[in-house]
Amino acid sequence: MYFLLKSLHLLFVMGWLSCCFVLPRLILLIRKDSQHIGIIALARRIYRFGWYMVAALMVCGAILGSQLPSIEAWLQVKLVLVFVLLLYYLIIGSFLARVIRGRQIISEIAMRLYNESSLLLVLPVLYLALSKYNFGP
Image 1 (cartoon, one colour):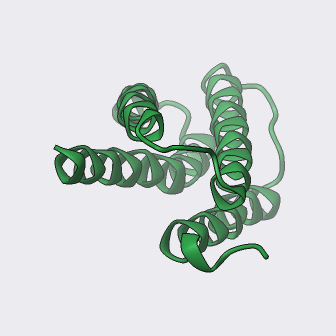
Image 2: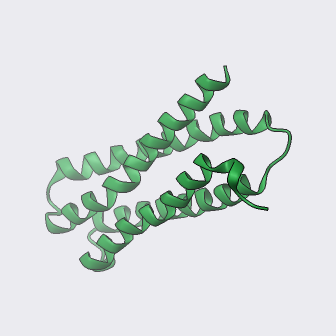
């Protein structure tokens, strides 16, 4: 049962991160062509799908976490980084809503940098998840 939950958790994480990576690009496309209803609808569906993935990964993560005897340092750091990623995703949603309404958002270059910044958050999360027993004193 543990490996099934762990596999589902990873699958949901991959689904959510794919949303994190693609939505800023879609926002830039909407910004260039705000009348393209297909891209707008796709972006909305992907954003909603991302929240479904977040809910599912949190359920699996909570069940997996409840089986741990204690919350170790690596997991505490990982959870803080995941919380920051959640804030990142909320900001993406804000950008999406604003660009759909035709309001101004950050520049194209800043949006591209924002898009790449998610990778800077994901890499330490991956490292912590893979090297959990080699973390800390």
